[in-house]
Length: 131
Length: 418
Image 1: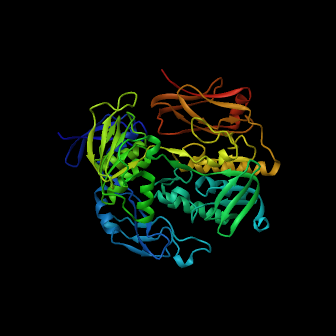
Image 2: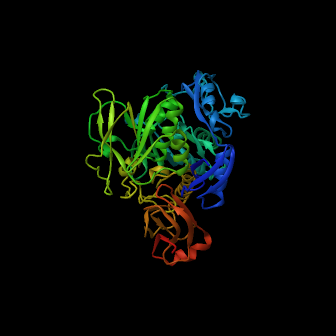
Image 3: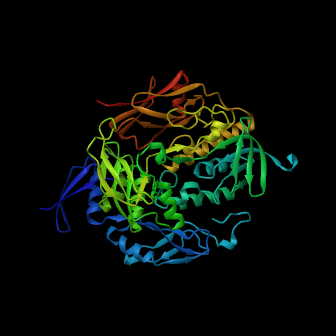
């Protein structure tokens, strides 16, 4: 039966947890030292998710990029698809924090939103220095 | 000429507009003090603005915000309060009597403050500080510098990278480079355990099959103009490279994630005593230094690992500054706080014992099933696991104070349960 090892991230101890599985089915989990470890590995095995934080291009702002994030974790396997889609996005300032950049990215039912607001350059406060 | 310098009087001047300084300024203004916040950058937020990953705010908001989101929440709070914010402004000098000279877009300004809070953050250690031998090509830089290039300027500093140091910055930049299409060929750590958070080891290295070389370091750098490669060697138990263990790796980017040092120049200038251990100022429970009315908080005191703690310390320093500016004094912090068994350092360094306080410590090595306790008291906190990479923060509450009162010094120790 195939096996796989995980490092639990529930606490700093970082237990090595071994799973035996068949296809999509988890047969046995061992090596964890608390219930959090078991739960962590079960969710990592069945549906590993990650929050994606990256940047997209923006025009007319004081910086050439604006940080964005997925609202919640997207399936790990969809990260490449998400990055690919975001690489082609270009926003225009002004942008508010939390604005939707891409809705339902890669059919994950999760939105990508901006992580900050950025004013238009012309709206800069007096005395501000351009980088 | 002298007459052309504008002079102003302030209750509190906060130097540094990152999370520590923003918290101190917000608290000061909330309590009715006349506060100036000085920031050299074009916006508030400090290092948070380039830390686009999530994980900020778990303790304060119960959410995993990104750095910019956390910064924006606090920037708005500064705006809602009546704080005199001076962006693009630099402190030229700070005297022990709390008179300082600022260079601002409006010109030179002399400020006479009742209390000063130094929230100047930290600097990354550079190649010179860890003395890696070899050539001096471009393509060798601190990890945080690369983070700024990528996240704020949209500029990739290399295509094939190696990271020295497994602190959180090094781990997070490894994932970031990978997501942006670079190849990260490995991360080296001189200790026999990763120094960053376990979650980051898994989500930044394991997820992308990036090898972590424990007990290894970089022993040579090659390249005449641009970096061409490094020599990676194994180290012995004294952290000395083992002869003959070196192997060459071709890369065009070497990132250093080898620690931060508190930015302490202004403390020195004001005559504040520094800690030999942390490099930051010695402070009491209000984050007041040994120069009355000069406070310090955040990474300028010691390197913290959660921004939430930085913010909370900033609030506390703000409270202290308000009390000092109002009354001209604070309870006398005459009980020295000592790092006892298995404790590398503890902050604050002195307490009065008259008010509840929070203390932060780092242990000397990873341990399981331990008690963090104050010697000679019943004050004790059980921990299933502690590591040097994760700061421990505990509170001594109102109910504990009678026990503290009887102590001449407060010795914090970490002991294993048998």
